[in-house]
Amino acid sequence: MKVVIIGGVAAGASAAARLRRLSEDAEIIIVERSGYISYANCGLPYYVGGVIESKASLTLQTPESFWSRFRIEARVNTEAISIDRKEKTVHLRDLLSGKEYTESYDKLILAPGAEAIIPPFPGIGSGRIYRLRHTEDAFILRDAALKARKAIVIGGGFIGLETAENLRHMGLDVMIIQLLDHVSNLSFDMAQIIHEEIRKNGIDLHLEEGVKSFEEKDDCISVITDKGSYDADFAVLAIGVRPDSKLAKDAGLETDRRGSIIVSNTMRTSDEDIYAAGDAVSIRNAVSGEMGMIALAGPANKEGRIAADNIAGYESHYRGASGVSAMKVFSLTAASAGITEENAKRLGLDYDVAITYQADHASYYPGSQMMMLKLIYEKTTGRILGGEAVGRNGTDKRIDRISMAAAMGMTVEDLVDLDFAYAPPYSSAKDPVNILGYIASNKMKGILEEFRAEDIPSLDPDSSMLVDLRTEEEVRGGMIEGAVNIPLDSLRDSLDKLDRSKTIYVYCRSGQRSYIGYRILKGHGFRAKSLSGGYLMYSYSRH
Image (tube, rainbow, N blue to C red; front, side, top):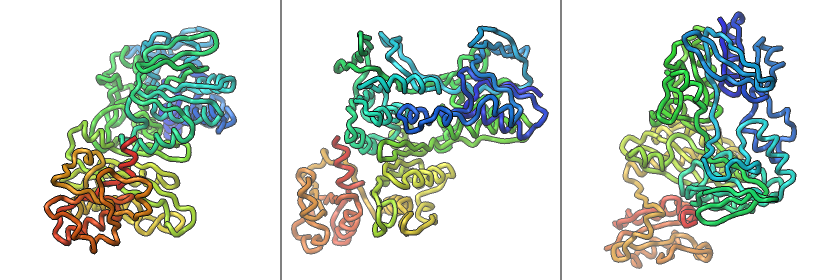
């Protein structure tokens, strides 16, 4: 059996190695357009910033090592031009010599990945505009950064933020221009914490600003937006990716409306002899059930392995991906899994959220640091839809737990019951993920009623009363306008100061004390609600 694999990064390289482990007899050829195979896309920004010092560290395998260990032929600098499905051949071009030729196959795996979105802005062809998608891009960008003083990064997603941080790490003045009202793949309120971190580290962040054109000058490039014009030594375009599926489309393979290659759960395309895997394919979101593009390395590796299994005769099925991801933003980690709150709104789901601000390990053990977590769940069933987290140590492991729970169809009550490893240096006896379960469970049982920061401007003073339960010392640093300060420990003795004809809206720093205050008020016959996420979330939401 002869297998040709188009694309030699995550999905393609994984498929090739797995296929060899399953079949010593198969002839396996990898065709890769760039000069490298099995390279670490996710590490490219860190090479640009000098955190990863060696070029060799970015490549997990070379054509020589692939041949030596696996007897797999990897042809780099080779482009696949077309597929003849009837003849079962691929037309190839050697990019160094220009020579074109055909290669036959018994089975074909398409793993071309994604390509950077490049809008037709005037001036987009300037040599001072860079992308960061392939290893060669990282080498070029680092060379440019070493000679520069100022850079503009266009786009606030994974690549944009990581590139901006690493350019700042090199000492450059950096500006980020983002079309949306927040960066990252977090919901608006959680992203505000990231905005503060970005600005604190000296990056000029421009939100809700759209690029219109570029103008190259003698010694710089000018980025013209709908709000102004900014000069820099160079710009990095990082506004997103789309499936690199032209080869598949031209061959007549089925694709969806966004251009992703449609595959079965065995990774087979509409042609029984052609499989596809990685960023170019449409896969199932394991939480929402939606089909679409999930451009992440973890799913790509799994998909490549499953394609190889089925080609080798070992039945294997892909269950879908929860879209779990994590990103370093200076001293913080921003992570999410499953459905964000904004996606839940778009899908018309009847959802609710639980928000908590917790220490990453036992607060009495030295070095504990706080993290903000949000759980999104279905109101009626308690089914976990997703989660978001921003913090430092241990943030990634909390989002992994939520990801697993969402993908397995668990409920908030399951989060309450789950046991996690505990010792004071690593967590608390009640892990922050358990706490999310407690909050959500209390809300579903009617033990807790909450309101959100965005509800505050619409509160009617004739029917509501806002009470700050923090200490007098805490409120000196700021409080919500119109609130009355009654410290929690004085609340029982101050009930006569409250108007029983009104709903009492209570808040504290993070929501823990206001829950206690809420229960006191309910126990004394008041109508009450507690602020989700406390004053912290309110303060972030105002940015």
